[in-house]
Length: 183
Image (cartoon, rainbow, N blue to C red):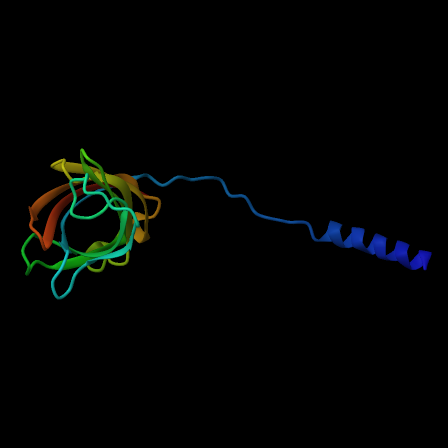
């Protein structure tokens, strides 16, 4: 029995020596960064026959002290339409899917957004840009952070300036100017 134990131990040592982890390291050769400027319009429908925003969660507490028609800490799911222009008949170039959290207090209403802007036509078909930022609705021009992307926007960073083009009780159309640094 003792002999069998020693044979097994020696065999285990020989197997571990023969099966070492191996990887090939390649030298890092960075590609030159590209800068892409995009201009498009986000069409958001709050109600009607095809809304692009849906409330998915809401806090049990409500307050009449905030300036919003929606209670503090409401969570929304978004599937907004991206178009080349503000008109209804403008070409659809993609959609912006994501989540938003409304944070309202006595002084201001802020939205915390995560959006993935996916493109379905043209040079960037199949690519997307991920944005994450606080969106204070009382400021005319807001800035969003580009925090990543897919496809031609892999490893993207940058920023977007978002400005309301038009807004009413049922529809928001926002103009976006996006600067994306990608490889």
